[in-house]
Image 1: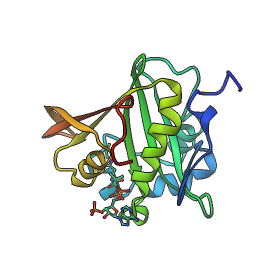
Image 2: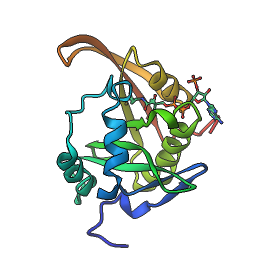
Image 3: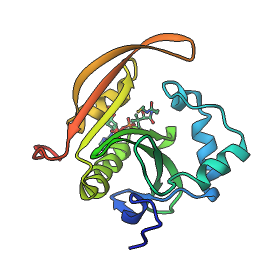
Length: 186
Ligand SMILES: CC(C)(COP(=O)(O)OP(=O)(O)OC[C@H]1O[C@@H](n2cnc3c(N)ncnc32)[C@H](O)[C@@H]1OP(=O)(O)O)[C@@H](O)C(=O)NCCC(=O)NCCS
């Protein structure tokens, strides 16, 4: 095991049915920029607009080691058949044993169960082995696809908070799942 590698990357690539989790790389820039600049994918995300240079820098340093509290790391979701990037998962180390998760899929990859498969693999194949047992997710209450996904993944809604995003007053829902819990469905 390479101790200079980010702990999440040590568990990659990770197969997940029609998709696989893998490290992001600068060669993903065209696909990454395409979905990150799609207004429907970006609608509830706090991303800054990125040009190609910013995307390349982001992808080059998507999961920097060491992973300390307060750091985000991003991993890629790629199609199993051709390794084409279709999305990403972001993980913020909030406290020892606790992460916040975020996820995005390119529009053509949505509505197929791929995000569910990818996040489930991340929970069980990456986070659980690293003893990251408390997983939180925060989503805009209007983001129904994200809420449905979290509910299918057995996250419980634990709170809500009023926030201002891009100048707009809205409500964030907080979801949480403990990975020690036995899995009833997945
Ligand atoms: C959130 C997001 C990743 C969800 O993607 P998704 O494709 O809807 O999620 P899933 O992988 O769970 O797919 C479920 C959908 O696929 C459908 N589906 C089709 N075939 C399926 C299959 N074989 N297995 C499972 N689901 C299938 C389901 O019916 C479901 O559709 P529904 O929600 O309309 O009922 C996506 O909407 C997205 O990227 N949004 C923009 C970014 C964002 O806002 N992220 C959340 C902030 S943290």
